[in-house]
Amino acid sequence: MENHKLIISPKTKVLQLIESYPQLEDVLINYVPAFKKLKNPILRKTVAKIATLQQAAAVGNVKIEDLINLLRREVGQDTLELANEVNYNTKRPDWFDDSKVTSELDVREMLNAGEQPIIKVISDLNNLQANEIYKVIAPFVPAPLIDKSLSIGIDHWVKKETEELFFVYFMMKNE
Image (cartoon, rainbow, N blue to C red; front, top):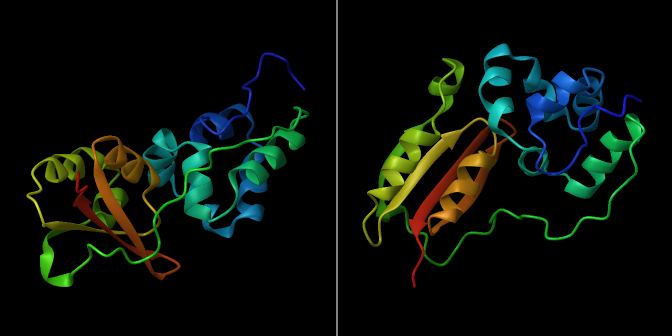
């Protein structure tokens, strides 16, 4: 192991990880088949550039501690005990009502074109009115987007339709 290489943590960016340790790309893909999307050069350039391992674990529906320690063992780093795992809301919330969905954005085309949807979505979320719900359609759990929405006081609900189709509903938190 080279001591000057990246120390793997939940905040490590996926692209940073696979650039520092190219051999870990196959480890990630074998551990969570959903990570095979890393082979897509457009997703690698966009999502992998901003997504942390914490967020990737949420996308893959695996425990962050297990993922981090698997990767750390592969490169000869000591394992970690982690707490405060971020969980995304996958249970239908009381505030959800289909009739309150006032706008939606399908981010799949943006991602396929190599664009980052986060700026557009956050702009739309900042314009949400009380009792309005905004819907995002995505090919995976958009963890960086959800994390950003939480930081600005927006609730969410992730509804998995299929392995490659997720609906994420956003609504202003009731204070």
